[in-house]
Length: 217
Image (cartoon, rainbow, N blue to C red):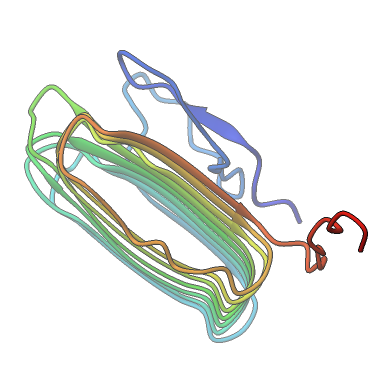
């Protein structure tokens, strides 16, 4: 069963390329207005999903395939919020919250086992959007993302085992793409407080590199 396919967030004024997700597990009924409501699909044993929505126009899609996965999502504030969450594996956890007078869009995909993500997003601009796309593929990965401001974007990807991430974006207009590929890469921790644009890539194949030979050595 395929739960994930790559998509791109396309906010006004820019494109956030992200390995986010579109969940086709529960097709929406044809409707004239924007899609809204809660759609949950769970396959396996011991999975739990809890979704709270304050705005009637908010959208949440949750698909969990595996065992003992937990998904908790709270969509608060007067603006409609959008979230798509997929977990494919065992023992994954996500605790996400969206809030503010503007719209926050979250795409979260966790493939593998024992991955955990805690996300807090708040959009403080009525005509702006806060975006996040988080993909973890492997085992024992952890992401903590806090965006509290306006027009902040993030795309965090971990592929491998035992990687951790901490990213905090405050104020407005921050851009971040952070990719870790490998196992046990260092947690860089990133804090941006307005108008910053940062892209970090870490890759560890496990290869050992020797220093170049010295003359006559």
